Amino acid sequence: MQINPPTKEIARAFGSSVEPERLEGGQGTSYRSGEIMLKPADSAEYSEWIAELFSSLPASPGVRFARPIKSSSDEWIYDGYVGWEFLEGEHIEGYYHDKLIASKIFHKSLAGVAKPKFLATPTGPWSAADQIVWQGSSFEYSQEFMDLINQITPHLKPVDGSEQLIHGDLLGNFLISDNLSPAIIDFSPVWAPVGFAEGIMLVDAITWEGATATDLAVFNSVPNIVQFAWRGVFRRIAEQAEQIKWLNKDKNQAIEAAQAFQVAINYLTLCPPTAGTPNS
Figure 1 (cartoon, rainbow, N blue to C red):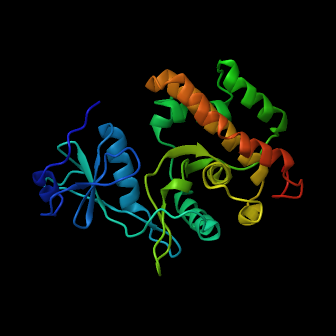
Figure 2 (cartoon, rainbow, N blue to C red; figure 1 turned 120 degrees about the vertical axis):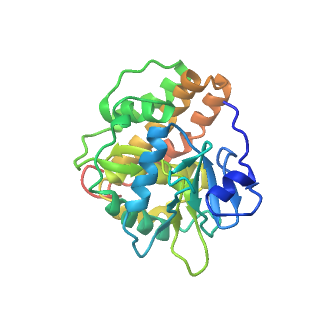
């Protein structure tokens, strides 16, 4: 669906008189206007839920996150957009120690949040993949995807741990700034044990940032990190196959994106059994 850029009127509704400028990265639909961010509203239900959530989360030393801004009409959504505080920082690779600390603090603040109703049914490729990984939903993919998944499933063991709301796409959604705590942006809600967020972080770091065992040693403090990482790479591969179904993604592009995670599979296959803690 085509989304029209936000106008100055929309920016003024959230308290800014600066002409909105599109920001690079993500899906290319976020705009900055002075000290606010303008992001397209998804469904009204989801946009209002996430705004209410982040307006009420307690501030915590060690991590930053944006607060939503109500419009001049006292609503979270104005003409298809939601206003958020602008956060200083850049996307910088590495900093895994700081990012992992921020993740732990952030997820602790989410521990008491009730499971939202919209997570009960898949609404896109990512939530469909999450249900495959955590609820054993059935799937049928072409051989290219199954060749990868069949390398993963023999390693999966039961994982203990209560499920809660987590961020399912953390690594590329940190902002790093001197003298400030890491900031977490672009919340992707998933209902799973906290370690799943950090397992996805680990496989993303291997695949997208070329992280080494030395770089990733900090993740060994996460209980069951190897099991969560196996589920993380499973999810990344499944989401690519699901994007063909949900988003009509070109099959060859989806296969190429999934096969990039072979390096993470290789890493986990060779990972010392002492990495992580029980069930690793």
